[in-house]
Length: 388
Image 1 (cartoon, rainbow, N blue to C red):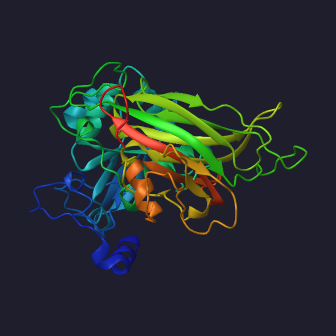
Image 2 (image 1 turned 135 degrees about the vertical axis):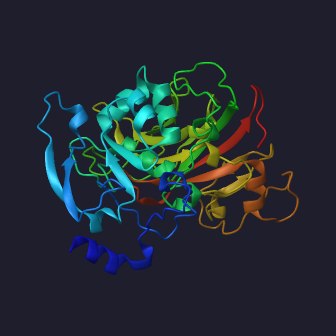
Image 3 (image 1 turned 180 degrees about the vertical axis):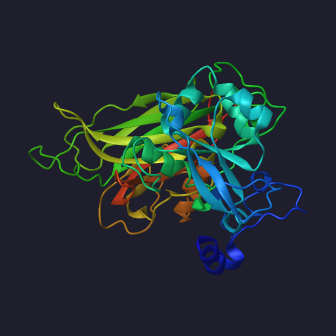
């Protein structure tokens, strides 16, 4: 009955593996599988001749249980087995997987176990395992939902998958895919095949910052500061913060410069967090997370915007940007002795100069109305001045 419902409902969208196909589904690209639904489950042996038999029903979280539960056996009919593409299997260890696991098999493991493998002594083996096989990781203590509790990790997940058009698929860097490459997450020096870069970041100002949601502090004035965090391999993880700007309300000016050396930019993420400095805990105001590789200087990617806020932008005599919150400025204006002598597109000028408006998000990922950061981004391959 279940097999019949799946076939008649999904029809052509149901992917079915054909024997003449030389590659398993785990070896195919998302482009080849676009518009298809892949079923995972238990599968009968290829040489099975009957209509139904029993198979083991292994608990996906069994690897975390110290107590070994008795293996259950459940009935499985051939009709349902025939439309299963990915075969669910239990992970024992990397050596066993390398010897007996096939490309059509996919193991599931808990978030806790995956974290231990990724950060422990088996990190390199875990990377090599996933060059060959698919691994499904499900959250600890909850169902495999598409949305988890708001917070830092959800911000990073959202930021990571914002690239590639937000389609939900991001290709791993070549160093984590190619069989001949060597990758160690714990490396502190140059990684073979990697291209370390230097991020030169200038935090200039913030605009229209709201009061922290649920704040109990008295008064309408906030004292914001900005935390700039880099997430990636352990040697790349770091954070810096600006000074606190007091009594300037929602539009503080910082003009502070930071420099970050990123060993493996392909998997690094940059996160901006705006907090309200307070005696009893610093309240969250907004954040924005973006993959390092989306920090293309001179281009506009993802939700890294140049907002249409020309009314606040002027050029000083030195050619540096300054802010004037005044309603009468409705067009981009350049001071007489500015290096820009003609009215021109501020979008083009700011883009060429490497200046960016970053649209801030709430802790649930929703845009904060008109709230932005104004920064300058430059990336080089060696220490020194940045090229925007």
